[in-house]
Amino acid sequence: MSDRAQPSVWRVPGFARFWMVRVALTGAYQVLGVAIGWQMYAITGSALDLGLVGLLQFLPRVALVLLAGSVVDRFERRDVVAASMALQALVAALLMAAAQGWGLHAGRGLILGASLALGACRAFDMPGMQAMLPALVPEALLARAIAVAASATQAATVVAPAFGGLLYALGAGWSYGLTFAVDAAGVAVLLSLPRAAAAQTTRITLDSMLEGVRHIRTHAVILGAISLDLFAVLLGGATALLPIYARDILHIGPLGLGLLRAAPAVGALAVAAWLAHHPIERHAGRLMFGSVALFGLATLVFGLSRSVPLSMLALAVLGGADVVSVVIRGTLVQLQTPDALRGRVNAVNSLFIGASNQLGEFESGLTAAWFGAVPAVVLGGLGTLAVVWAWRRLFPQLARYDALR
Image (cartoon, rainbow, N blue to C red):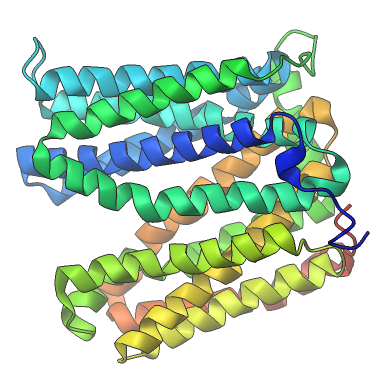
């Protein structure tokens, strides 16, 4: 079907509200992350505590991956995501009360506990949101809808951290108050969406929790797509070293660091907006491998660049290439997974995404400590290209995958 012949996803009942919730969820999480990080460092002055904040947000996603996917499949998905957002709003309210001195102490323990709770929220809301989308839009519009949803995430990623930092300058309570208000509004919008029947009616058992893992393991296209992203981003995590590049290599200071951090999201937002109007319909496997290879090449260019404009362009290309891979992988996983398993499969997929980003930052820091920042980024780019080469041979079904419909 041609681009003109396809109806707009915005005309699909409920999609606009879903998009608003996606913006609210991502934006509130970003603002909360900025505030928690700043406050923890202000209280303890410890880089180790900053790392602990990230670790405690990641560990619940590992511990809860099987349970979260089963809950998303067993219960009404709208309600699962709403409960997760309500818990995030409660966390923000407690942090706001502590920041304002309303009976709570804004100390290290409270922030670490809040980080653990936020990690539990992400374990449920990410697979819940991913599993909701295919039920909202026709299959023919799924790739377009995923691109539009990705644009929501990228827009919030560009704007929310800067706005959160500005609010924090007025006081931590302002950042936490905004997060509470946005999450509460998101819950209200979510609950206005029509209810859908639960995909699964059997009780949750260990065997049922493992069905998503078995589905991924026995479907080479899904396994290849999500593992390609995992290892490519794990090796190519150049963004973790941006502070070193800004200060010691490009010599552009903290303002330049902010621009470098924004560049991948700007590139991603531009490509997501393009894909929303020009969805990928053919040669999906080849395009996915090509986009990941471009991600690796852009990483190499950034690693070797000493020019600020070239470095920012490389980061923008890196972000744009990543979105192509994200949209193809997201569409492919939804199309290759029956609705009754989407929660469990998306929970594993979400864990892979989180592992690639957060463990990738650790890998980049470790190799930078061993070899230096530039060799670490260059080796990461070469590693990504090596993964593309290997995965084309390990998963020929993915390379041949054609139509995203």
